[in-house]
Image (cartoon, rainbow, N blue to C red; front, side, top):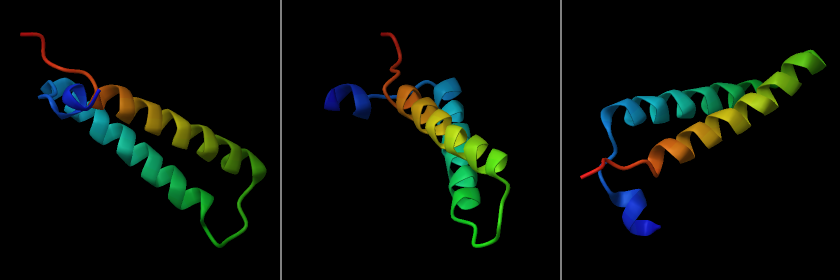
Length: 66
């Protein structure tokens, strides 16, 4: 698993990993906002954290076929 995670990642999946990290970061900011936020926004941000994390994890372990 470590070898797969440290192997070269294709360009498309590096882009998806960056997008996933951005989604997770933005959702994390919404979840930790010190202002009152509607419950629907909190729920959507919770799902966005999960989606961003899964997208990033799957993109990280995708390797180029040799």
